[in-house]
Amino acid sequence: MTATPDQTHPIIQLTPIENTLKSLLLDVADYILERAIAEGGNAVNTPRTVLRFTGGWVRDKLLGIDSHDIDVGINNMTGYQFGLLLKDYLDIPENLQKYKKNRNNGQLKDAIVSLHKIEANPEKSKHLETVTTKIFGLDIDLVNLRKETYSDDSRNPQMEFGTAEEDAMRRDATINALFYNLNESKVEDFTRRGFEDMRDQVIRTPMEPYQTFKDDPLRVLRLIRFASRLGYRIDEDTEDAMKNKDISEALKLKISRERVGTEMTKMLKGPDPRGALQFIDRLELYPTIFANHQDDVGVDTSSWALAYNALQKLLHSDNTSIPIARVRDLLIRDAQEVYYAWVIAAFAPWSTVPDRVAQGPKPRPPPARAAEVARDSLRSDNKTINLLRDAARHWRSIVDVKSSLLQGRMSGTAAEIRQQIGLHIRTWSKDWRLCCTLAILQEVAQGGEFNKVIQEYNQFLSYLVEHDLENVYDMKPIVNGVEIAQNLASPKGPWMSKALDMVIKWQLLHPEITDKAKALEEVSSRKEELDIRSK
Image (cartoon, rainbow, N blue to C red):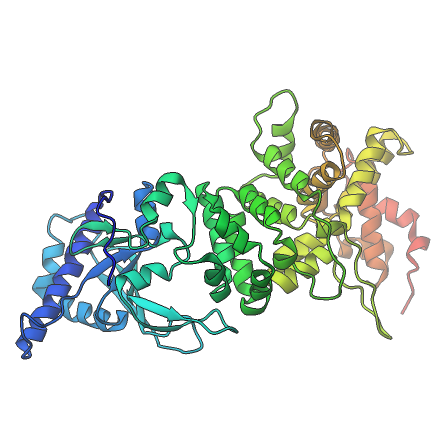
């Protein structure tokens, strides 16, 4: 017997554009019926096309969040079939005109930009033809209601037509299984738990969680993302299934590294990255998500929470008794750097693990562990891999230089100390600020008291500001190679890089001098050190 949705359902208020879209889609449904009857169909027996807005759009509307992405579920044909009929309907000039009434602001200038057909493909997760298109400025997916059958070795199901209830029950969470029935203008909850779980702020699978995750282990990461994004808790039975070793193994075997990386990126760019990392930590999923594919070396996450909680405090604490805001503003300057700071926090456990030992007759140094795991487990991009490499390579040096400065252990005059620190920063890479962020997290993770660590880095960064070293990584020599070669009356050669380094060191020692002649004089006086060879 087909279940009926809960009779008590909330009301969704459509925007004017959404109302216009609804009217259009229902008019197309009527057009489909009229065509079928005109072609000899029986008005009583011809099935009606029932349309539903599904999934995330419904959830977001109930939360008061506007969304421009709408999935339209169709009960009796594929998305592509409906899309073609939609296009036929709008090709009739008078049909399009009626949706433009009272819309003179250009919103309906182009009713449909294009129909993009996604072919039926047994190698992909969507085995029935669907369509993506843009209608009235909204991103629309047209797709038939469906049910799924899974095999043991793939997360890509066999798809076939299904009922609204079957379509709801196949989804990853009850709160994502709510439908808005356009024909009846009401919200439907075929799982009978969606409304309740939204009220109680709970993430739960519509069906038995173990089998849900065994079928598609990526749902584990999706539910963590939704829980952290919405600030919801995960149902206890659902969490227990997430921690099951079978599910961890399935996540490794059935899900591509790219998909795992995509989910992690969405979590770390979301509203609560710390919440996402807490879920991963508590559910003991770190070794599964951030897996070592090179050897059997493991990673210790026992103090990881100290690191990601420290970053949360650094980014969001308004405690004015310590200079958190100053340290934050100097190290993490925009939204992109906030994201990369969370990437660094996510990989903090691996950044303490020694690199692999190079093997073979001509061994090449392997990447830093954190960079290697990012490459192998998440298929991270080069920017991320290089950042993790640099942060893992340099955070210990940063701690040492900072401590040496504050404890007065650096030898030399004030100018020489400035020079030493400037040269260190130039070795820490262009992302030295994010490398410093990892140094802070590691000091806290290794037992440092947060307030004390922040005080120390404030002193260190204040020194850099006072001595004009913030942008030292980008500092250029005040003389170029041509000028040096002419001054020494020597052809360019391998010696030139050493000469330019001399200039940089001299500039750091004498920041008040901007005369090129003085810099050239310095290089000339040390010409013998350059080992210039005549041709």
